[in-house]
Image (cartoon, rainbow, N blue to C red; front, side, top):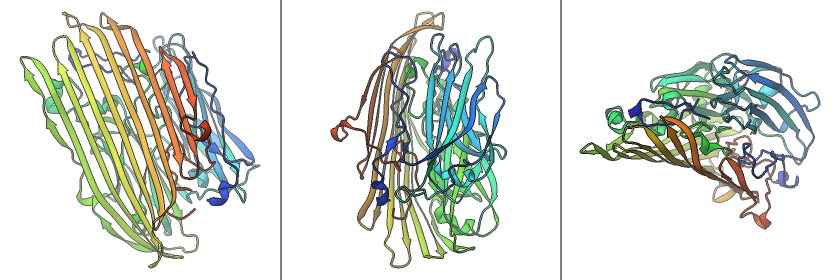
Length: 596
């Protein structure tokens, strides 16, 4: 649920209105995305579809036209496709959602199978004249071990429908299975998936404070070679605009939310720090000013990407046959973060027990802690200056295991940084807050098999830039008159894999959005808006020739332009079938520490 963000002085919250052989399989056929119509107010995003191989397919419908008009969960049953026996080269989740015209909040949506999360995102808000519909896709090949047998699942999408909030949400979802072949090999999917959710049929867990944990006790196989956990952490209610919050001691002066701006997810094993997951500043379709997000939503608003944490250095600890407590917490949570995760493990199929040791964990001695510089000044009742928050940690995690194919050592070196500066100008007629935030990650994993084995090094660099500015203008009586707002938001990801000094694979992903709008008020109620305009630019390329580029422009709430292929060879989009152009993690194929 989103609200228009307004300064706290008025104590108002206005409801939102509104492998090389694979290369010879032929380039890639990508599923055709929904068509674009210039002048249309319907949802239009530049995000790429999931690329598909040119092989036979089978489809399993998970559910059709579910109606979401309350907060009850919607169960469904899954059975493996009879005509497509695994292993599969790829499995893709497709979902189609819509909401009827009227008034409705944005809502959080999630899909679950055997208690594991297979989709997490939010919905678009409708208007009195627009009933938006949208399509989502996600590569779910990592869940193949669950998909080989019958499972139960559920859709979680709470929604209120009454005399005020009239928009009814509908949704359908299916899985598309792609057969493997000699030229289109099966994905190296994890051998098992363990849900980090509510412990039941599947639902996120709410963490209200930084001390709260999503915690699960799990007894794992004793022959784990690699382990990863995908983390989702979504700010809700008081934490929806967490990037605009300041420390409690200056919250009144800055007329903003308290709790500070520093947020970061922590992963632990048996209470020991084991990894860090930076949090993306997702903005819901009703957030700040809902008109800014029509018809193009914020980065990943409709389809969140998880952050993948490598737990492989801890494999020897997880292999001891005992129950282990895996937990996720959110530093700075201030009512509240909605959190879930999936643990993926790869096994040694030729040894029942794999032993080894954890050899380094410098993260354990570096608790998450931010530095805050309060530079606010009060000059005759006029507030100015800024509040700057920063945090950075560099750490190493290392371990080895003795497998059926020799000793394998894994070393993870990572730097995670956070910086948030909020500048304020507050007087009797104006409230202005300008936010400049960036979260960045630089992570290198080196894997070596045997004493003389060639080291394989993967490097991930990611950055989450956010710039937002809110201005509220008041009349002499202190009533709202207008509120111009602007947001620039990005998702940058670069990945490379090397064997020794030879580059095996490299990708670049960039998703940027710039948007702005001005609300107008009468008697402190929103009565109109003007100047809505936005642009989204999505770019993906890899070292094997893939290239995706789409630019979208909107104006006054309708689609104004769509340009494909800018910067690609001959202006053509080409996506090799095994790529992840959306920037999602891919340790089942291209990002595995092993060579293609």
